[in-house]
Length: 297
Image (cartoon, rainbow, N blue to C red; front, side):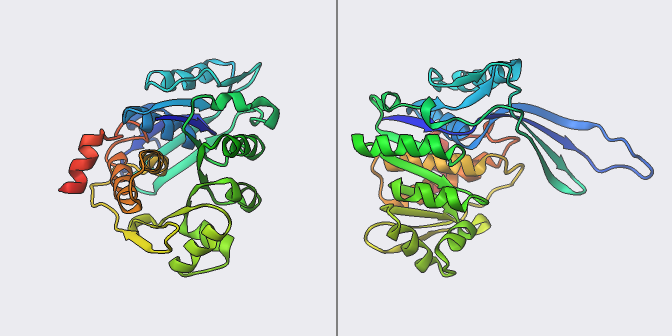
């Protein structure tokens, strides 16, 4: 199986600070990690770790951070020949601070790199590709790729996120499998109950709908109309950064390999849980064997 993942990539800097002593105003980092990040990029890295041939379509600046972002992909086995490098661009950066007193804080610096545009992608990128993964980050370019994929008979898995109803409305009819949160799906369909939410998503075009439920796990529905629920795996959580990205990669893996929906949900839940056991979205991506052992255990 060959997957093309198109969307956002960034560099994650993740730091942990401990509780401050009385009267202290300055606090030192106890742990610090630099990793690649971004939904489509981390999903691609997860797929590569699970033995899938995968390429990445994204955009960075031609600065050192852009080169570093690309190195985090190639080092993981992700092909980057379709990556674009904007001349003079300041590449994107995400800073995550895990604070024992106030919890997790996220700071996103998008840089000044212009979005990937429709004219910068082509049908030729899908040559030899079995499945296209989209994260909704660059709707014009991703819509063009989705249309080309449909024309070539390539299945499309896409994630819909908060704050992008217009993007969701645009991409949804072109997706074979949609992955989204309960809140986004409810807003999009105007329905509150899971059964109705999934039915509403399927009426827009996809043949499979997967809805994430946070600490309650995930739900899904296929063309048979049966609502499936899968509880979240129990773990000792360290950091949730990138867990949803790994979940998306796991759904893509299962769809590409033709698994039944119940197994897709079970594997994706376990994969996302494993990713929360360490610092950052990529350091704790489990092997297939480790994820399967978690499911069986």
